Image 1 (cartoon, chains in turn brown, cyan):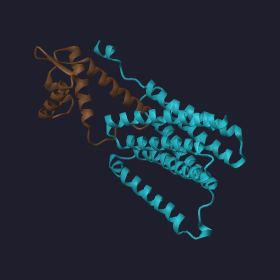
Image 2 (cartoon, rainbow over the protein chains, first blue to last red):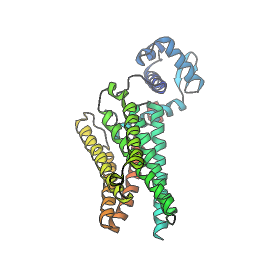
Image 3 (cartoon, each protein chain N blue to C red):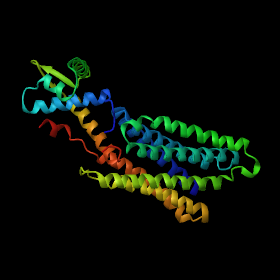
Image 4 (cartoon, chains in turn purple, orange):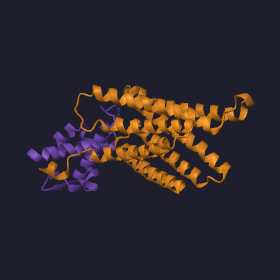
Length: 91
Length: 228
């Protein structure tokens, strides 16, 4: 995608996607999620707090997981990306 | 009866185009991509051109008002296809050139508006714009060029695309239908063929529906399978 700077919504999508993938296999590590989303830890924390605030991520017994609303967001984002690829705008 | 059917066709086109505008707005909100903005503006202008055409039909007894709406429709449609073509042109360039996209588009718009209204006001009678019918045909040729470029660009893009993306055929097909709309209306303008006129309306509805279908057939993985 020929976009220099990621939008806030793109960053949120990356965080949610990586956290959901991490949750599948093992206890998700926030450092790994921050690293995977290519974010400095302080910016990642802000993003995480925002996602908790809008109920896309929840914390239970010190573990973070993606909620139903978060999964819906990931799905919608991927749908739009696929749509734009089909429209021939993105590689 | 025929006018009623035409107004209904314009209303359906407006509805479909507005759904498309909403989808591109949603896509722009997610991506903040300047190229998506180009498509958003382009389809918004197309939607407004359908509204203007509906108004032309509605006020067909008032020549002054219907001619005004005809000019507005011509301008909105020309700019609409122009924006979409520019979006595709710049989406194939480097990220750096993309930054100049809006600037160039604004410059192009400003120059053409100044030239158009300048010609109307300042041009001597022998240089004045001919009738709206002739201007309409000239702009249709421009629209055919814009749409032809978009179709070629899409075919090239999909040929070079290494990743297999399913349903790639629909987008060039939808733009080809829009091309056929312009071509049929050009034929209708020249020889008054009713078949071409009716075909143009059907093809336009089909192309807009196809764009919406492309969105609905695009897939994310559903939530349940992602959680598994």
